[in-house]
Length: 100
Image (cartoon, rainbow, N blue to C red; front, top):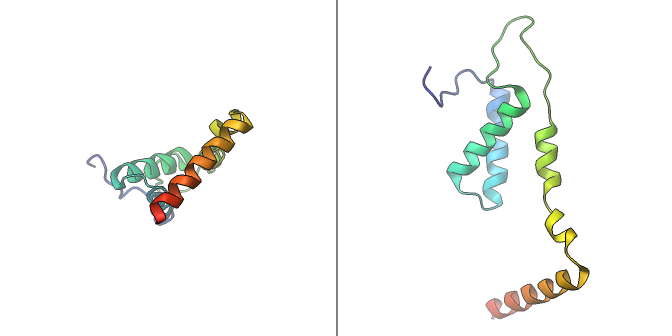
């Protein structure tokens, strides 16, 4: 089986990877990088390609998805309120300038 072959993955894993990839792309991640991250997340959660057979199943670990969702926002939360406010005002001015 060549590298990158997805035949060992279940339909559910393929759907999960597609959904995760779309989410990354909607946040501005390039297509190739989004696909790489999506499959890395699926592998981390499910333990890689699933093969059928009795006793071969392993429980899913959804911690990587939770971690990704929680990771955002920590940098800005650590900054002082005055600095965040100044940044917000600057961003608003930029948006206003570009809109006209």
